[in-house]
Amino acid sequence: MTKPLRAAVVGVGYLGRFHAQKYAQLSGLNLVAVVDADRDRAQAVASEFQGCKPLTDVTALFNEVDLVSVVVPTQLHFSTAKPFLERGIHVLLEKPMTVTVEEAKELNAIAQSTGAILQIGHLERFNPALMAVTGQSISPLFIESHRLAPYKPRGADVNVVLDLMIHDVDIILNMVGSDIARISASGAKILSETIDIANARLEFANGCVANVTSSRVSHKTERKMRIFAHQSYLTIDFQERRFGLHRRGERELYPGIPEIVSEETSFESADALLTEIQAFVAAVRGEGPVIVSGLDGQRALETAIRITELVHQGPTSLDQPLDRSL
Image 1 (cartoon, rainbow, N blue to C red):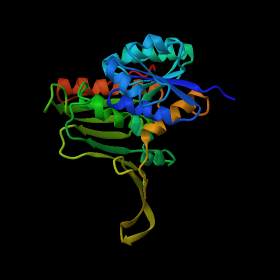
Image 2: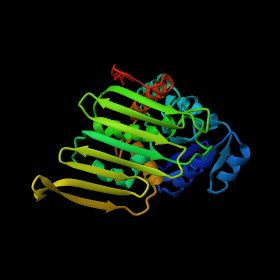
Image 3: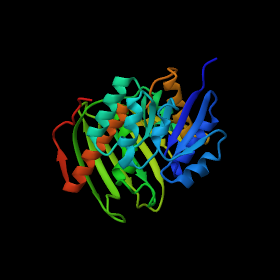
């Protein structure tokens, strides 16, 4: 019988507690500990799970676990994940991956040298509506995305580009599969001391263009993407978990006016975090690929940082391609 995997969660605030709950649901895996700088918080979360120890120091985990989720503030991602990867312990690291691209590159290099799995927590990749698109054969020509949300202090430790837009940047980079040739961006600080609303135009070497807008000062929540290709386009509503395929039909409704044939699919409520953690555990067991690799996280971070820099500079654009030596 296969020995159960030993898991822990480092950082059990709002999101980290959910990570712990998902691990506790999985068979063939033991949640052995949770770690938090707040001892009372660690004890409170650990008490929810049988056999789970509350800890305040990650060093106590190094000989006790096979894999960890790192769900600490972004500024601590690098210093927290590094010692686990150095010891060959597999890491699911929340997004944004790190503060700097240099830190991301170092984590990827360590993971490669030790053979540790490094998966980045771009949760939207596990939305069932997007997963349906993954099975479609499409070569995007133009992509438009909107990710809007009301202001919440939680998550405001990073700007809206690194908090919200990075989800769509990651999806678009993975979908287009081409180098970025040029970026233009603009944005503004509204309610916080960092960028709260931003728009970026990504022009790819293969000719595809993506227009990406994110706001955390909206009165409504919206997470939508439209992907246009030759004689067809796809719509994704991440919030409502809907996927639509709209294509040119074989007949004309009127002379010069083609028929548009539409197929829409709705998905029942799904637990994307559970799906993400199941995929991570499957990768650790060698039963599946790493869905969002450390290199994916690095590319998304690099692009988000360049967008942030452009917003700070004011309306301008980059004519040089991003560094692709990943």
